[in-house]
Every structure is written in structure tokens, then in C-alpha cells.
Length: 313
Image 1 (spheres, rainbow, N blue to C red):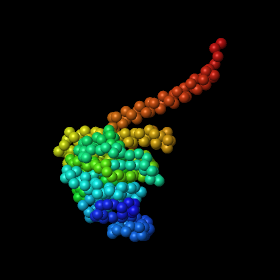
Image 2 (tube, rainbow, N blue to C red):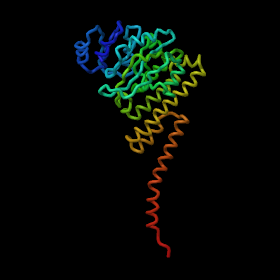
Image 3 (cartoon, rainbow, N blue to C red):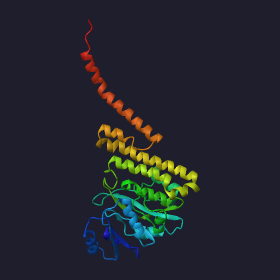
Image 4 (cartoon, rainbow, N blue to C red):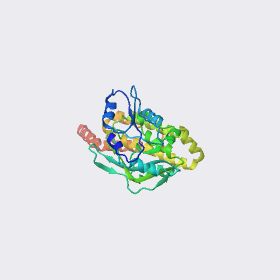
């Protein structure tokens, strides 16, 4: 990551390294030995949760623009310069690059589309990101935004275990503004079960998504937009609620079905608040499960009954 930042062609880079606690002097020594440019270093005395840590970076950054880059991800050398140029549009509040998913060795597994619009309105962006998926974006963990915009919208929301807090921030940044894109640079997200949230216990996933749903009705930035654009927000909120429920449902029906006992899996279906479409899908799943059980067990039960039934005189 230090090499990647050092190769950026943008002339005015402030690198703020943040050690989220309990690493002694190991991180500071690595930076001192391997980063040739000026930098700032901060360290938490003990580890804080993800959203709080990211907001520490937002609060302490001194530049006009901010990119948060995880220590296992990558950006191309022109990433900052291209997105700063894209954000010169005064109506744009956040800028994004092409997104590539890479494996542990850096091999590209898949990529977003290389043909993207210059800008999208907030409603069009929300629809493209979480309904049609037409541009192939899978994550919003790294982007470029004005530091002042990040602060004015309240930064990363405090969602349990950081669940989808980057998605929530992108929503807040985009509302009433434009999202700018460049296909001349790339962000490369390294795939792992942890980075995608697949290793998370289902109770933690459910709590994080419940808090995300509650945020849509409580966040001040969102509520200000909803009051001035009621019809647009009504449509976007419905789409986002469906996305949240679908995320949970498809992980529940597949990933967690393999991990949990039948009782715990059944119980976990009811961790989300009531949503008609979600619970209809749950009921259909349970009916399908019962049908499959019946196909397997009923013929055997009949055979046992036939053998035990007394013969007619």
C-alpha cells in the first residue's frame, strides 16, 4: 500500500497512516522504513470499531479531498489525479473509478464496466448501484470525495460491525448531488470472506442491516433530502429497503443454511423487521423445504405402515 501511494502522479499527497491500536511500534516502523515522502502517523491506544476509526481519518485529514484505502487494496497511479479532475464539476460530490476485484495474488477476478457515464444523479446512481447493477459495481469502500462534504454529512454512520457503512455514506453523499465517474483509473479490491462480510455471524449481519434500515428514516442528511424531494426519496428508499432484505435473504437461504442447525436457521429468518416481500419469500422457502422433506420421507413412512398393517382375514 505504501508503494502504491508513493507512485501516485498527483503532486500534493498527504498520507495519513492510522494504526487502529494494539500493534506496538510495528506499523510506524514499516512506514518510516518504506515511505519516502512526508506523512503523518496516528495510533489508537486500543482498537475502535470500523466506523469510528474511519471517522477519525475524516476528522484529522487536512487536504481538500480524501480517499480512504484499506491496507490490502490497490489503486492505479493516476487514481487521485483522475478523480480530482472528475470532481471539478461543482455539482458532483463524490467521484468513482473503474472497480476490479482481485484475489490474494493480485489477479483480476472481475471488473466493473469500462463504459460509464460522466455523471449520474443521486436517484439514477442508487438505481444503478442497487437495482439494475448495470455498471457492475460491487463495493463502495474506496472513492474520492471532498473532505468538507464528508464532514458536513456526518461521515460514516455508526452501523453494527461497520455493516454496509460505506454504502450508507455513498447514499448520503450522493443525495441532491451528482456522482462523477472516470474509466481511466481503477480501484482494486482484494477479495476475502472477511472483506465481503461473508464470515460474519448471521446475528451480526441482521443487526447491522436493521440499523441500516433505521438510518433511512433517521439520518439528518437523508431526512433533509426526503423533505425537499419526497417522491424521489420514496422511490429510492423502497429500492434500498428491497436491496437490504435481498442481501439478507440470499445469504440466509444459501450461505447460512450450510452453517446453521435447522432450528437456528429457521429462527434466523425472523431477525429482520416486517417487510411483506421478504417474509413472503421466507414462507415460500419454508413451504419448499417441507415439500422436499415430504418427498423424501413420505414414501418411506408408507412402506413402514404397509409392512406393519395387519393382514385382512
